[in-house]
Image 1 (spheres, rainbow, N blue to C red):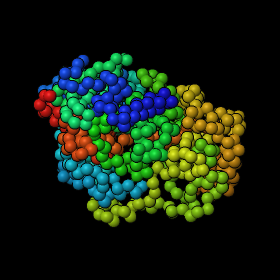
Image 2 (cartoon, protein in one colour):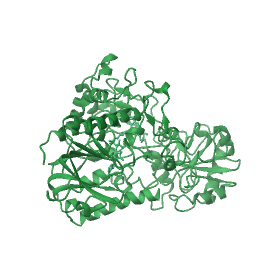
Image 3 (cartoon, rainbow, N blue to C red):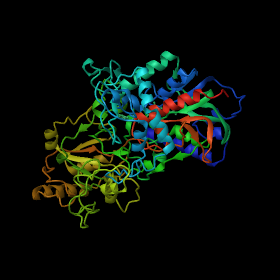
Length: 618
Ligand SMILES: Cc1cc2nc3c(=O)[nH]c(=O)nc-3n(C[C@H](O)[C@H](O)[C@H](O)COP(=O)(O)OP(=O)(O)OC[C@H]3O[C@@H](n4cnc5c(N)ncnc54)[C@H](O)[C@@H]3O)c2cc1C
């Protein structure tokens, strides 16, 4: 992990140092600024195409197809050794709507206007307090709503097969069921390393069923895909002015300059893997949150955003990225004892997968949080482990105490058991407010107060051998990642605490006395049958039978909800509000649209591809 963090930090630091040093725009963005220097039209180009697309995921691949179908020649550069980005390992739920053919087939009434209305309902307040759509940019949402059903048709016409079932409701689907599921068909699964079972085709969904058909269609149309080519800079005529001319990429130690006669499209997938970038929006998300969903297949390293900002681009809708308020930005891991424990992904990575050497462990699925306690980096319990994504406040009292003593302050009260019915565009929805989705980070931080830390630090699940038996866990590789310090055991709690210092994010050892005190206190709560400290419902099992275990259980960053400012045509806009000619963006690297997933990415990719292809050649 250190390597990855250093890599992302190195990229970021150098870029911004060069920016503040006032160097020319083309020299600002990349790891290899010399390669992008001398941006004149006469500069030597190694390759050229009408449209050059950065990233082959949910944005890049539709962009490539759309541009090619409009007659443009297209090069896609992809940093990874395979196509697809997060989209190819995603669950394959495609939430377009607006009147898709499948909605019509199953009698679901929907329209672009209804979709627009839902996505701009400023009054819709989630239970965690976040007004999901209040800060959505209306121009961007209108473009999405008008293109959603067209994008569904576009996906189908380019080989995507949707599971034959009625659309289901998801997330913002308040007026109509909009979710279709991409069938995996016979495409091999990256996670499994083998073809999908025939019984799953057309009945189950997967990102592979979305992306492999699109890849096949793009290749058939003549799109050139350059794998292991990482964009390192965007080349513009003048620093902060003029047209974008192309990009610089790095491939096996060599730098290439690729000219884009009509446009460059950024589809690099967001920024949550880049610690310094994500901390601009939430300083708490320090480096210990190291298991971003979708890693280690691809990272969201902010390279597209940074390269575009270096030629003048603005960010947009940054409020959407504040972790407290947006579901999906940070979640509790579904699997523990491994670095990459995102719940929807971990069961699918198998040792036969071509990237299992990077995944390293399957993780342990917790079926009953009564079997463990969670402690922070100083060995203290800090919340009710049996809570959801974030623990609900206990009925009486809440908050971590630095000494491990029971809290004395009154809590904010239990959340409503049945949320008030949301009324469309009605301010009374604010009555639905209760607590933050991600208060476990704050709770962990509260327990380490006094130390100069911004994040909550590593969070560990602590349990004993009886819990292992009850959960039927195998506490050995490949289930757990002992080699890289994400899982430890000890004959005593003292021995366990000492060993945990080997984890690179732990920093200093957990004080053995604190861990022993926390476990002793918890065991006494089991005796009394009441968790007076954090309100865990009737604590059931003591932690008392060696060996003892510590498994990594630190929250997982998920989506990127902040990105470059774009307009309805997916053109990138600068800090003066002017379009940057020849530069486009969509998906998780684009801002202004608070929406999970591939729907906005595929729609914006298609919009960007169509518009870039329609430009006159530079
Ligand atoms: C486990 C998981 C499950 C999910 N399930 C769903 C779901 O069911 N439904 C849904 O709607 N959404 C789902 N999502 C979210 C969805 O996958 C993403 O929102 C979507 O893929 C983002 O699309 P994108 O084009 O912005 O980025 P990506 O699809 O990630 O593509 C970005 C691509 O750009 C490449 N790249 C980055 N930087 C560079 C560079 N400098 N040079 C060259 N290439 C670069 C990356 O390697 C990557 O291939 C899921 C995500 C995860 C992680």
